[in-house]
Length: 430
Image (cartoon, rainbow, N blue to C red; front, side, top):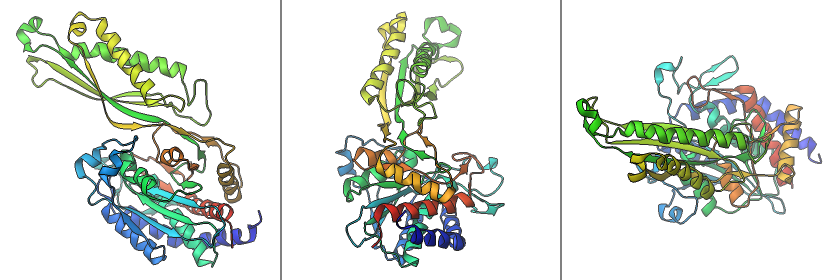
């Protein structure tokens, strides 16, 4: 590597000054920022970028502009909170010119820590115990956010000037779909040559993510007193027919599409095709035959399938169940699509930026990373959909979205080093 000397200086500086990185991460974890309530932590990050002379701005999502985009959907947090007090934060480290640009992007919203009684310590503690930092969002993904900011700080502290421009973004709402976050920033911010998203991955490189959609099925029944239940139609029992057919579709899809593509893609280790029945609502009294039943479901789908194809399969399954029942044939169930409608994404291993990140991981860890894919929707997709090669690569975390979430200190330091190495090699030095 032509910049090897400068690069090693930066890597050593990050290691030597790791206490400052961990202190920043603790600050972030100790500010609760469940999706919809991100303002306080964004103010802290705006302050941090201001101290670094990155001229940060608060970018408040414009609902009218977002609704024009084909990937817009109404998130739960948007419906509840709107976007008035939910800014994204963006800063810029301007290069000297002639280099490739890079965007460092991380979300600062977290999922709820409930139920709190399952935690062995305060979920907002930020405590460091035996090399692990504890707290909600420590791994997903405030460690990545702290690491990317610290990587920029390392460049500045050592008087290094990059050729390419460096955008730094902290965004809202990823846990709820990313519409007001990374999607909005891609609409209004200048396009960069690549993006690095340090989601927790134990330094594997994720190149793909699943599409995700939500759907609701409503089945009508005929209410009656339980003493004369024969005179009514139990909507729960009729819904069981629908559920059986949805489960058959689920099993069929997993047998045909085990991973990311029609055969098998090692980048997609999870089952991107999972159909989950997550909510069921029916009845209001034990002595009444329920006159309606409703389920809400989530379906994931891999690169290679479209939203329209997946929707047709679900609706066909529901119609097949209805066609086989005398009541449902005349009283058709209704399928509605709501919330998430994320498209999948994938990036080729041969992409020049992918190979650069691979080399940087090797430079820091001494091993070449695996290429993987995810079975959930990721913010990375918005970059790829806008023609920007982007990878997910970050620290080692455990129990994200569960109780007693942790991230390892060592992997957080290494993440900052990988990002700094990528910045130097990708953007170039003056």
